[in-house]
Length: 370
Image 1 (tube, one colour):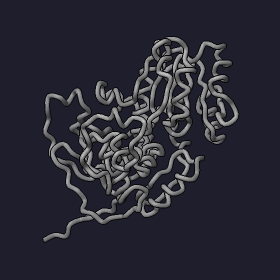
Image 2 (cartoon, helix red, strand yellow):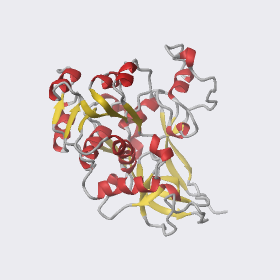
Image 3 (spheres, one colour):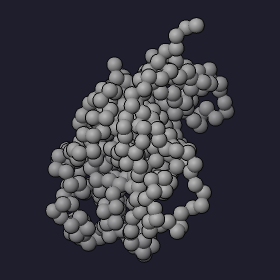
């Protein structure tokens, strides 16, 4: 009997760790699946760190319906201010151990049987994808590992001018573009709250969508400086300045046409109703995982629209949005290379997350594979 081929896979064993690098069998692709050898996998600072903290559902569990309040219940952080209104339906599965990594790019190593369907034109099917093709896409599970399985309808070939590191960021560009395209209109004054990786991508996409003026808020000086290089007109330090009052001054008391929340923090979410003009649009990108007190009356009285990045995954044209996201990187309209701060090997997974937890100047940490 031939010896089974194995791969290394990072596994988070529980809340806060520890991490294990396991030797597991390389999976085989089923019908309409691809086996992809991972070449680069980037960390999502917001969701991955919050998954380790048991605030955000691990992505494999989120795909099965786990929500932040399920995390709070699992972690015994209840009762809280919303316990009496939680839905009765619970999430039954244990969130740990879990594999991590939902932003990745790699090379097709094996192809499962292709079975065409009438939905091919509506999805992202490409019957010509074959071994050796360079691809990225979403959703991805277990990207901090040497191989992953993806559905053929969730990937797209990478142009020659996008390397694997840039390709690993197709997923965050997709998620940001999903939101920004819905809320930013030509000539808008736009506020982007938070200039981590998602916020810096949002600043660039807002420019592409025709924003006239972009105001950003970010406490880390290094990130504010990069935001100015990538298209922001004004960068506010919320540690030294009242963001609401400053935006009020900058807009002559009118407020911004569009606000994009990309920090996922209660303090940045609370200010949103107060910086908006009447009839303005809010795009929520930051994955806030704790209850937030917000003045909902302003959303009503100012007639504000609030849109989440998740909406277009359910109701949008996936193929079109994925292609556009790849094009934004390929054309240079969205620069992702300047966001990469740290690079690690798979065996250094525990160190990578420990450093990320402490160093707020890091924008993107990246695992690089041979």
